[in-house]
Length: 381
Image 1 (cartoon, helix red, strand yellow):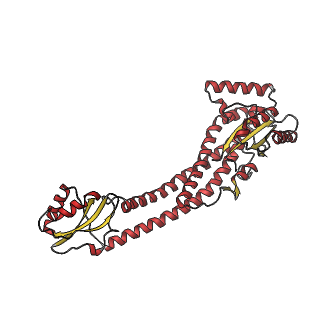
Image 2 (tube, rainbow, N blue to C red):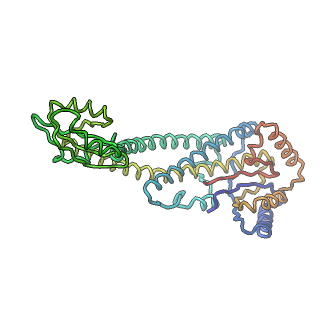
Image 3 (tube, helix red, strand yellow):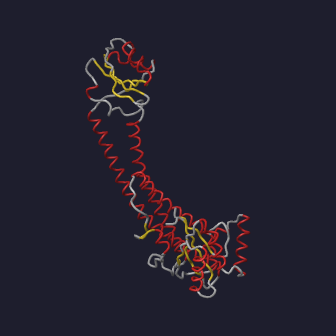
Protein backbone atom coordinates (compact mmCIF):
# COMPACT_ATOMS: atom_id res chain seq x y z
CA UNK A 1 0.00 0.00 0.00
CA UNK A 2 1.28 3.45 -0.93
CA UNK A 3 1.53 6.07 1.82
CA UNK A 4 0.84 9.03 -0.43
CA UNK A 5 -1.85 9.55 -3.06
CA UNK A 6 -2.86 12.42 -5.32
CA UNK A 7 -6.47 13.29 -5.99
CA UNK A 8 -6.61 15.43 -9.12
CA UNK A 9 -9.19 16.79 -11.51
CA UNK A 10 -8.66 17.86 -15.10
CA UNK A 11 -11.03 19.91 -17.26
CA UNK A 12 -13.06 17.95 -19.82
CA UNK A 13 -13.29 19.70 -23.21
CA UNK A 14 -14.59 16.85 -25.36
CA UNK A 15 -15.58 13.72 -23.46
CA UNK A 16 -14.64 12.30 -20.06
CA UNK A 17 -14.04 8.83 -21.51
CA UNK A 18 -11.66 10.23 -24.14
CA UNK A 19 -9.71 12.15 -21.48
CA UNK A 20 -9.58 9.07 -19.26
CA UNK A 21 -8.14 7.03 -22.12
CA UNK A 22 -5.53 9.73 -22.71
CA UNK A 23 -4.52 9.70 -19.03
CA UNK A 24 -4.27 5.91 -19.04
CA UNK A 25 -2.20 5.96 -22.21
CA UNK A 26 0.16 8.67 -20.91
CA UNK A 27 0.72 6.93 -17.57
CA UNK A 28 1.16 3.55 -19.27
CA UNK A 29 3.80 4.90 -21.65
CA UNK A 30 5.81 7.17 -19.37
CA UNK A 31 5.12 6.02 -15.78
CA UNK A 32 3.75 2.50 -16.01
CA UNK A 33 4.41 1.78 -12.31
CA UNK A 34 2.01 4.53 -11.17
CA UNK A 35 -1.38 3.16 -10.01
CA UNK A 36 -4.27 5.10 -11.54
CA UNK A 37 -7.96 5.03 -10.57
CA UNK A 38 -11.13 7.00 -11.26
CA UNK A 39 -12.31 9.08 -8.30
CA UNK A 40 -16.08 9.02 -8.52
CA UNK A 41 -17.56 12.31 -7.33
CA UNK A 42 -21.34 12.70 -7.72
CA UNK A 43 -23.02 15.85 -8.96
CA UNK A 44 -23.17 17.87 -5.77
CA UNK A 45 -25.23 20.97 -5.12
CA UNK A 46 -23.16 23.96 -6.23
CA UNK A 47 -25.16 26.83 -4.71
CA UNK A 48 -24.07 30.39 -5.40
CA UNK A 49 -20.62 31.49 -6.41
CA UNK A 50 -20.36 33.59 -3.25
CA UNK A 51 -21.17 30.59 -1.05
CA UNK A 52 -18.62 28.48 -2.93
CA UNK A 53 -15.92 31.12 -2.53
CA UNK A 54 -16.74 31.50 1.15
CA UNK A 55 -16.64 27.75 1.65
CA UNK A 56 -13.31 27.36 -0.14
CA UNK A 57 -11.65 29.66 2.39
CA UNK A 58 -12.40 27.14 5.16
CA UNK A 59 -11.80 23.91 3.26
CA UNK A 60 -8.02 23.76 3.71
CA UNK A 61 -8.25 24.44 7.45
CA UNK A 62 -11.04 21.90 7.92
CA UNK A 63 -9.11 19.34 5.88
CA UNK A 64 -6.10 19.74 8.15
CA UNK A 65 -8.31 19.11 11.17
CA UNK A 66 -9.96 15.96 9.78
CA UNK A 67 -6.66 14.62 8.47
CA UNK A 68 -5.03 15.34 11.84
CA UNK A 69 -7.65 13.34 13.75
CA UNK A 70 -7.23 10.46 11.29
CA UNK A 71 -3.48 10.34 11.93
CA UNK A 72 -3.97 10.77 15.68
CA UNK A 73 -6.15 7.64 15.84
CA UNK A 74 -3.74 5.71 13.61
CA UNK A 75 -0.79 6.60 15.85
CA UNK A 76 -2.80 5.56 18.90
CA UNK A 77 -3.45 2.16 17.30
CA UNK A 78 0.25 1.74 16.56
CA UNK A 79 1.15 2.66 20.15
CA UNK A 80 -1.36 0.20 21.63
CA UNK A 81 -0.09 -2.57 19.38
CA UNK A 82 3.51 -1.76 20.26
CA UNK A 83 2.78 -1.90 23.99
CA UNK A 84 0.95 -5.23 23.71
CA UNK A 85 3.34 -6.70 21.16
CA UNK A 86 0.35 -7.90 19.14
CA UNK A 87 -0.43 -6.85 15.58
CA UNK A 88 -4.22 -6.75 15.33
CA UNK A 89 -4.22 -6.43 11.55
CA UNK A 90 -4.39 -3.67 8.96
CA UNK A 91 -6.63 -0.63 9.01
CA UNK A 92 -9.97 -0.97 7.27
CA UNK A 93 -13.04 1.08 6.37
CA UNK A 94 -16.29 -0.90 6.47
CA UNK A 95 -14.23 -4.07 6.29
CA UNK A 96 -12.28 -2.87 3.24
CA UNK A 97 -8.54 -2.08 3.36
CA UNK A 98 -7.86 1.67 3.51
CA UNK A 99 -6.12 1.86 0.15
CA UNK A 100 -8.94 -0.09 -1.53
CA UNK A 101 -11.54 2.22 0.00
CA UNK A 102 -9.67 5.26 -1.32
CA UNK A 103 -9.01 3.94 -4.81
CA UNK A 104 -12.55 2.57 -5.20
CA UNK A 105 -14.31 5.41 -3.43
CA UNK A 106 -18.12 5.42 -3.58
CA UNK A 107 -20.13 8.35 -2.25
CA UNK A 108 -22.44 7.45 0.66
CA UNK A 109 -25.72 9.02 -0.43
CA UNK A 110 -27.58 7.87 2.70
CA UNK A 111 -25.10 9.58 5.00
CA UNK A 112 -24.38 12.63 2.86
CA UNK A 113 -27.34 13.43 0.55
CA UNK A 114 -26.02 15.04 -2.62
CA UNK A 115 -28.84 17.59 -2.57
CA UNK A 116 -27.63 19.00 0.73
CA UNK A 117 -25.72 22.30 0.55
CA UNK A 118 -21.96 21.77 0.45
CA UNK A 119 -21.51 23.79 3.64
CA UNK A 120 -23.98 21.54 5.43
CA UNK A 121 -22.02 18.46 4.36
CA UNK A 122 -18.70 20.02 5.41
CA UNK A 123 -20.07 21.21 8.77
CA UNK A 124 -21.58 17.78 9.38
CA UNK A 125 -18.26 16.05 8.72
CA UNK A 126 -16.40 18.52 10.94
CA UNK A 127 -18.90 18.07 13.78
CA UNK A 128 -18.82 14.28 13.57
CA UNK A 129 -15.01 14.15 13.58
CA UNK A 130 -14.83 16.66 16.45
CA UNK A 131 -17.06 14.41 18.58
CA UNK A 132 -14.85 11.41 17.82
CA UNK A 133 -11.75 13.40 18.76
CA UNK A 134 -13.34 14.41 22.08
CA UNK A 135 -14.24 10.78 22.76
CA UNK A 136 -10.67 9.75 21.92
CA UNK A 137 -9.27 12.24 24.45
CA UNK A 138 -11.52 10.88 27.22
CA UNK A 139 -10.72 7.25 26.47
CA UNK A 140 -6.97 7.82 26.15
CA UNK A 141 -6.95 9.83 29.39
CA UNK A 142 -8.66 6.99 31.24
CA UNK A 143 -6.23 4.44 29.82
CA UNK A 144 -3.17 6.59 30.56
CA UNK A 145 -4.35 7.15 34.13
CA UNK A 146 -4.31 3.39 34.77
CA UNK A 147 -0.91 3.11 33.09
CA UNK A 148 0.46 5.90 35.28
CA UNK A 149 -0.73 4.14 38.43
CA UNK A 150 0.87 0.90 37.29
CA UNK A 151 4.11 2.63 36.35
CA UNK A 152 4.26 4.27 39.78
CA UNK A 153 3.81 0.89 41.48
CA UNK A 154 6.38 -0.75 39.20
CA UNK A 155 8.89 1.99 39.96
CA UNK A 156 8.42 1.29 43.66
CA UNK A 157 8.94 -2.42 43.07
CA UNK A 158 11.88 -2.21 40.69
CA UNK A 159 13.60 1.04 41.60
CA UNK A 160 16.56 1.64 43.88
CA UNK A 161 16.45 0.17 47.39
CA UNK A 162 16.45 3.73 48.67
CA UNK A 163 12.89 4.26 47.38
CA UNK A 164 11.35 0.94 46.33
CA UNK A 165 8.71 -1.05 48.15
CA UNK A 166 10.46 -3.60 50.37
CA UNK A 167 7.49 -5.85 51.08
CA UNK A 168 8.48 -8.30 48.31
CA UNK A 169 12.04 -8.57 49.67
CA UNK A 170 11.33 -9.06 53.37
CA UNK A 171 9.82 -12.28 54.73
CA UNK A 172 8.04 -12.69 58.06
CA UNK A 173 10.97 -14.67 59.49
CA UNK A 174 13.34 -11.77 58.75
CA UNK A 175 11.53 -9.50 61.21
CA UNK A 176 11.57 -9.82 65.01
CA UNK A 177 9.15 -7.65 66.94
CA UNK A 178 8.61 -8.22 70.65
CA UNK A 179 8.20 -6.26 73.85
CA UNK A 180 11.93 -5.50 74.02
CA UNK A 181 13.35 -6.24 70.56
CA UNK A 182 12.88 -4.63 67.13
CA UNK A 183 14.32 -5.33 63.70
CA UNK A 184 15.37 -2.35 61.56
CA UNK A 185 16.12 -2.33 57.84
CA UNK A 186 19.28 -0.57 56.72
CA UNK A 187 20.05 0.58 53.18
CA UNK A 188 23.82 0.46 52.73
CA UNK A 189 25.77 1.69 49.75
CA UNK A 190 27.14 -1.24 47.79
CA UNK A 191 30.67 -0.02 48.40
CA UNK A 192 30.14 0.63 52.15
CA UNK A 193 29.13 -2.87 53.18
CA UNK A 194 32.43 -3.63 54.92
CA UNK A 195 32.09 -0.40 56.86
CA UNK A 196 28.54 -1.36 57.89
CA UNK A 197 29.51 -4.86 59.03
CA UNK A 198 32.42 -3.55 61.07
CA UNK A 199 30.60 -0.63 62.69
CA UNK A 200 26.87 -1.29 63.11
CA UNK A 201 27.39 -2.90 66.57
CA UNK A 202 29.06 0.29 67.81
CA UNK A 203 26.45 2.81 66.57
CA UNK A 204 24.77 2.63 69.98
CA UNK A 205 24.80 0.42 73.05
CA UNK A 206 23.28 -3.04 73.34
CA UNK A 207 23.46 -3.94 69.64
CA UNK A 208 24.01 -7.68 69.22
CA UNK A 209 25.74 -9.23 66.23
CA UNK A 210 22.52 -9.73 64.29
CA UNK A 211 22.83 -8.05 60.89
CA UNK A 212 21.88 -10.12 57.83
CA UNK A 213 21.90 -9.17 54.12
CA UNK A 214 18.57 -9.78 52.40
CA UNK A 215 19.09 -8.28 48.94
CA UNK A 216 21.52 -6.33 46.79
CA UNK A 217 21.02 -4.23 43.63
CA UNK A 218 23.42 -2.19 41.49
CA UNK A 219 23.67 0.59 44.08
CA UNK A 220 22.66 -0.63 47.51
CA UNK A 221 22.38 -3.62 49.81
CA UNK A 222 19.51 -4.31 52.21
CA UNK A 223 20.48 -5.42 55.71
CA UNK A 224 18.49 -6.25 58.82
CA UNK A 225 19.69 -5.49 62.33
CA UNK A 226 17.89 -6.59 65.50
CA UNK A 227 18.40 -4.58 68.68
CA UNK A 228 16.70 -3.42 71.85
CA UNK A 229 13.72 -1.15 71.21
CA UNK A 230 14.86 1.44 73.74
CA UNK A 231 18.02 2.24 71.75
CA UNK A 232 16.42 2.18 68.28
CA UNK A 233 16.15 5.98 67.98
CA UNK A 234 19.81 6.45 68.94
CA UNK A 235 20.77 3.80 66.41
CA UNK A 236 18.84 5.57 63.64
CA UNK A 237 20.54 8.89 64.40
CA UNK A 238 24.05 7.40 64.48
CA UNK A 239 23.40 5.40 61.29
CA UNK A 240 22.34 8.54 59.40
CA UNK A 241 25.51 10.31 60.56
CA UNK A 242 27.56 7.43 59.10
CA UNK A 243 25.66 7.59 55.78
CA UNK A 244 23.44 4.55 56.33
CA UNK A 245 19.70 4.90 55.64
CA UNK A 246 17.28 3.25 58.03
CA UNK A 247 13.99 2.51 56.26
CA UNK A 248 10.78 2.52 58.27
CA UNK A 249 9.09 -0.81 57.68
CA UNK A 250 6.41 -2.88 59.36
CA UNK A 251 5.64 -6.26 57.88
CA UNK A 252 1.96 -7.02 57.43
CA UNK A 253 0.72 -10.04 55.54
CA UNK A 254 -2.64 -8.33 55.08
CA UNK A 255 -1.01 -5.19 53.63
CA UNK A 256 1.15 -7.34 51.33
CA UNK A 257 -1.90 -9.22 50.04
CA UNK A 258 -3.87 -5.99 49.56
CA UNK A 259 -1.06 -4.51 47.50
CA UNK A 260 -0.84 -7.62 45.38
CA UNK A 261 -4.60 -7.57 44.78
CA UNK A 262 -4.43 -3.89 43.89
CA UNK A 263 -1.64 -4.56 41.40
CA UNK A 264 -3.50 -7.51 39.85
CA UNK A 265 -6.63 -5.39 39.47
CA UNK A 266 -4.71 -2.54 37.84
CA UNK A 267 -3.08 -4.96 35.40
CA UNK A 268 -6.49 -6.42 34.59
CA UNK A 269 -8.05 -2.96 34.19
CA UNK A 270 -5.19 -1.83 31.96
CA UNK A 271 -5.58 -4.81 29.63
CA UNK A 272 -9.36 -4.37 29.53
CA UNK A 273 -9.06 -0.66 28.71
CA UNK A 274 -6.30 -1.33 26.17
CA UNK A 275 -8.42 -3.90 24.32
CA UNK A 276 -11.49 -1.64 24.48
CA UNK A 277 -9.56 1.41 23.29
CA UNK A 278 -7.91 -0.53 20.47
CA UNK A 279 -11.27 -1.84 19.23
CA UNK A 280 -12.76 1.65 19.46
CA UNK A 281 -9.80 3.12 17.55
CA UNK A 282 -10.14 0.60 14.72
CA UNK A 283 -13.84 1.37 14.39
CA UNK A 284 -13.40 5.13 14.72
CA UNK A 285 -10.51 5.20 12.28
CA UNK A 286 -12.79 3.72 9.64
CA UNK A 287 -15.48 6.32 10.39
CA UNK A 288 -13.06 9.26 10.33
CA UNK A 289 -11.24 8.04 7.23
CA UNK A 290 -14.55 7.65 5.40
CA UNK A 291 -15.52 11.17 6.46
CA UNK A 292 -12.13 12.44 5.29
CA UNK A 293 -12.54 10.91 1.84
CA UNK A 294 -16.01 12.44 1.48
CA UNK A 295 -14.50 15.74 2.55
CA UNK A 296 -11.76 15.36 -0.08
CA UNK A 297 -14.44 14.72 -2.69
CA UNK A 298 -16.28 17.92 -1.68
CA UNK A 299 -13.02 19.84 -1.72
CA UNK A 300 -12.04 18.54 -5.15
CA UNK A 301 -15.52 19.29 -6.48
CA UNK A 302 -15.63 22.85 -5.08
CA UNK A 303 -12.16 23.70 -6.29
CA UNK A 304 -12.88 22.26 -9.74
CA UNK A 305 -15.99 24.45 -10.11
CA UNK A 306 -14.01 27.52 -9.05
CA UNK A 307 -11.19 26.58 -11.39
CA UNK A 308 -13.06 25.39 -14.49
CA UNK A 309 -16.47 27.08 -14.11
CA UNK A 310 -20.02 25.84 -14.67
CA UNK A 311 -21.55 23.52 -15.62
CA UNK A 312 -19.32 20.92 -13.87
CA UNK A 313 -17.13 19.34 -16.52
CA UNK A 314 -14.05 17.67 -15.10
CA UNK A 315 -12.53 14.24 -14.62
CA UNK A 316 -11.34 13.25 -11.13
CA UNK A 317 -8.83 10.50 -10.51
CA UNK A 318 -6.48 9.08 -7.88
CA UNK A 319 -2.81 8.36 -8.50
CA UNK A 320 0.00 6.98 -6.35
CA UNK A 321 3.27 7.89 -8.09
CA UNK A 322 6.59 6.94 -6.57
CA UNK A 323 8.91 9.78 -5.55
CA UNK A 324 11.07 9.26 -8.63
CA UNK A 325 8.00 9.36 -10.91
CA UNK A 326 6.33 12.49 -9.51
CA UNK A 327 7.84 14.99 -11.97
CA UNK A 328 7.04 12.75 -14.93
CA UNK A 329 3.43 12.30 -13.81
CA UNK A 330 3.05 16.04 -13.21
CA UNK A 331 4.25 16.65 -16.75
CA UNK A 332 1.71 14.17 -18.16
CA UNK A 333 -1.15 15.78 -16.26
CA UNK A 334 -0.13 19.28 -17.28
CA UNK A 335 0.01 18.22 -20.90
CA UNK A 336 -3.56 16.93 -20.67
CA UNK A 337 -5.04 19.87 -18.78
CA UNK A 338 -5.03 22.33 -21.69
CA UNK A 339 -2.67 24.80 -20.07
CA UNK A 340 -3.22 27.16 -23.00
CA UNK A 341 -6.74 27.87 -21.73
CA UNK A 342 -6.71 31.58 -20.94
CA UNK A 343 -8.76 31.39 -17.76
CA UNK A 344 -6.78 28.51 -16.30
CA UNK A 345 -3.45 30.09 -17.24
CA UNK A 346 -4.51 33.40 -15.72
CA UNK A 347 -5.63 31.78 -12.48
CA UNK A 348 -2.46 29.70 -12.17
CA UNK A 349 -0.32 32.80 -12.63
CA UNK A 350 -2.45 34.62 -10.07
CA UNK A 351 -2.08 31.83 -7.49
CA UNK A 352 1.67 31.72 -7.98
CA UNK A 353 1.93 35.44 -7.38
CA UNK A 354 -0.32 35.24 -4.33
CA UNK A 355 1.78 32.42 -2.94
CA UNK A 356 4.92 34.50 -3.28
CA UNK A 357 3.47 37.36 -1.27
CA UNK A 358 2.22 34.95 1.36
CA UNK A 359 -1.54 35.40 1.21
CA UNK A 360 -2.09 31.64 1.25
CA UNK A 361 -4.38 31.48 -1.80
CA UNK A 362 -2.30 28.63 -3.19
CA UNK A 363 -3.60 26.53 -0.32
CA UNK A 364 -6.75 26.02 -2.33
CA UNK A 365 -4.79 23.97 -4.81
CA UNK A 366 -3.47 21.72 -2.06
CA UNK A 367 0.19 21.63 -3.13
CA UNK A 368 3.07 24.06 -2.74
CA UNK A 369 3.22 24.60 -6.49
CA UNK A 370 0.33 25.80 -8.65
CA UNK A 371 -0.72 23.52 -11.47
CA UNK A 372 -3.09 24.06 -14.40
CA UNK A 373 -5.32 21.42 -12.80
CA UNK A 374 -6.66 20.79 -9.30
CA UNK A 375 -4.43 18.60 -7.10
CA UNK A 376 -4.52 17.52 -3.48
CA UNK A 377 -2.16 15.19 -1.65
CA UNK A 378 -3.49 12.53 0.72
CA UNK A 379 -0.93 11.21 3.21
CA UNK A 380 -1.99 7.95 4.82
CA UNK A 381 0.94 7.82 7.24
